Length: 401
Ligand SMILES: *Cc1c(COP(=O)(O)O)cnc(C)c1O
Image (cartoon, rainbow, N blue to C red; front, side):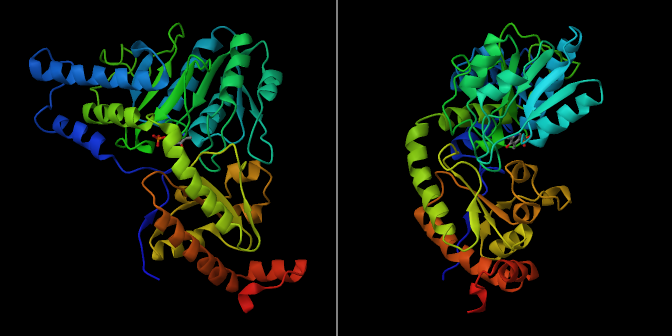
């Protein structure tokens, strides 16, 4: 087999596109002005920041004045949740509705607010990784300050019924925030039609540079300042703008929302080939709903295998992917997302997330389908856990052939 390099971790981060890079580069060199300066070099930067703000607004169906640039998805989530919590607490509303399987930028922010007297309802998700608008409706109370529910899950790729949830929140007059970091560019989004009040997005998940993102805040919603100091971002987030990042984000999001269905068709076909192929490996399961999932998300559990070992071996074959365990945090806790859909600890440890996009090829898919069964078999042949599973459940151990 010829070794390839296959990047299949686009939910972790993406390559900066050529167009985003080319748009950003002059802002490091000739066009280095501070967007607050009054001479031409500065005004050019301000003009380009405005153009990027228009591009982000257009991509979401928002107004230009509703877009705030931030340093990324985590910052946008923190600002939205802590900001709305602060304003609503003054009105005696200290209840938040979210889900158990949000990104940690949302979960840990909610946990922080619990220390300050907020009550948080963590909606359970079903075995397919979905929630319903009815669950949200049932959870809303008179003192609900905010509903914050992710658009698409970053581990298992499931897509929530955001328009229905938005309708419920609008009817009940509750503010609705969505972490759309994984959805932008993969799902059509219209913040007005979907009744979204606040939306977080991140540049580096959509081929823009790292360290830039945006928060959409519907006009009429009062959000307090995130950073005090200068007058940037309409006085709400002080600090000299990340002009290259912002310009890159503007270009990247414009490209990302162009012909989503066309891109998805190609990506979905590759994804389905991966799912079908990997499920042929004994004792595997697909995590997350088969239909209502991001076009590029594959998440498969392998019984009797540690996710980390799988990733390390795949890396030796040139395949870059993720697993369910939060190894990056230095802990080996199984993923809260996989536990939330009812996986036992043991199975939640042995999962593989492949996140592909339109830069991947059919050859990448062939290669993954060739390598993963070899690696899985090898790891299982050395795994006491696998041996135990086979023995106790009377499964024939195919690794011993
Ligand atoms: C990546 C991600 C974030 C964090 O975005 P950063 O820009 O890396 O801070 C938040 N939410 C979801 C769903 C993500 O996938």
